[in-house]
Image (cartoon, rainbow, N blue to C red):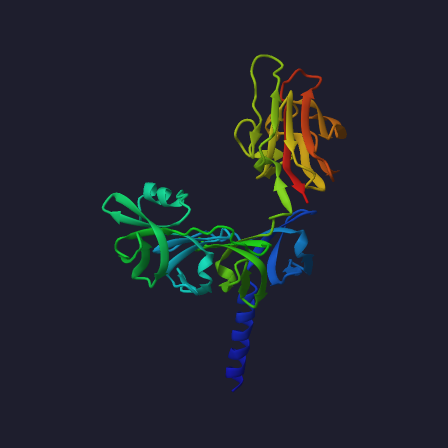
Length: 388
């Protein structure tokens, strides 16, 4: 009996360890990323176990939870795109006038309104046929039929699909379309609404689900979609939880309204996005950055931000690739007012900007020549982002 009790205790301990063995990197708005084991997550907070303590962080400060899992999507018959932008890898799909059923590649089942369906296509189609289906702009349901290497389309109304036959109304007649011939369906869905998303769930199977709420329950993540259906995912299958929507926009994801680049001599070094001017990762004081801009003197980038943001945050410095070289004058200007101005030279630690841009409509990044002609003038606005 004692041996049995000991075994039970060991099994319980192993189970608890497995439940919370999901180490993740958490990227936050106002502090450096932290890495630890996710203990709990709910709509308000998350709790992380570090080496020697547990810490809480409010969800509204979380940008991303990255579990570092490698995406390994299994073979699935269909890709299904929903009206809220979610993308599912499915083994089976069926629908009628009242409900749609989806069985995912890991055998999870989802039930949703048929109005949630936007696009369905077989994954084994040639790439050009998939592109044809995905770019269909018909303002009516469209069924795509494959005949060897030729793709035909019927425009009408998709009434139901039982997984074997599509009942499709075409030319005032309802026709059964066999699964063997069916390549895909484009559903006409004008004016479909969705709830406001707070997170994009990316899992290792290639599914992307927009969620309006989510929480953990032991080793599982329970998510409610912006389209109203609920799904439960094993935490070990989650790749990334992206909370950045609406909180942060990286400047490198925006197109400048105007660009003015004036070389000191004859060679123009065009600004680069998410890499330095040599095409390598952005680097300041030994730290590499995934996001940001690299500008060579003299360069003026103007962005229209329409008063939508409160803060502009960035690490600013001369890229490590030029060592001690480089000397520039840097300005950040909001609606004609200088928000930041400094001389910056190579070999210095980066300057950390956190500027008030509330109600600012036009934001300008300006890098001017310094004291050393333009030699090594490779200035990075690393991790440059606008925060709402």
